[in-house]
Amino acid sequence: MAVEFEIEVNQVIWVTRTDGQDDWYVSNVQDCDNKNFCISIPTQGPNPLILREGDAAKVLLISEASRFEFQTLVMGRRYDNIPLYVLALPKEYKRIQLRDFVRIPIVLEMYYAELPEDGQAPVFIPCSCLDLSGGGMRLLLKKGYHTDTGLLLKFTLPFDKYVENVEAMGKVVRSSLINSVNLYHVGVEFIKISRRQQDLVVRFILTKLYGQNRLR
Image 1 (tube, one colour):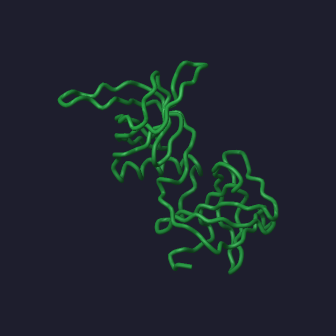
Image 2 (spheres, rainbow, N blue to C red):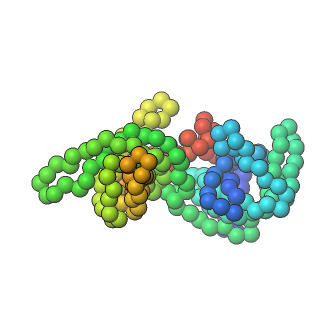
Image 3 (cartoon, rainbow, N blue to C red):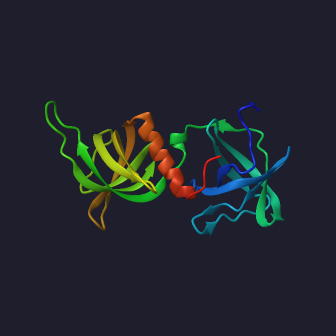
């Protein structure tokens, strides 16, 4: 393996099953040798991820220098003050873009505007964000839009002790009518956002996923 890839004790990781949509649970590495590594039981809020010996799992590992995804097998369980899963070290892995990592359901009050004509100021309309990733968001709007329609976005990320304002441009990738409420779910992909603000979005997501834990 490349030198830059390594699994370290106390490292925060994310785990999901390989037999469905990505539904990530947070954990951390408790022990590691040349064949296996042990992790605390992954959780998503109060819910644990139940894995059994022989199950396949997908792991995401993020640190300052490495962002990797790999598949592994559950080798069993171990108890060392806390219950642990024993996972096989991967034979293969792939480097990923952090912005492609994960989407979380979250309600944020925000504003959007259609792209104005030359010389005109954008007219921002209040709306709600329903989920968020480093690459885009899903909005609840009163009208639908054709694919590739450009939208301007303004929203605030509420961190624990401060807030960050984000402004971006996106394009519509899907739009569907929710008949029961006569509103539209509109998926938007970021196409113009500063690197700093995209990093803020990702850090906000990670904060929501693992609370007060810190990246190692």
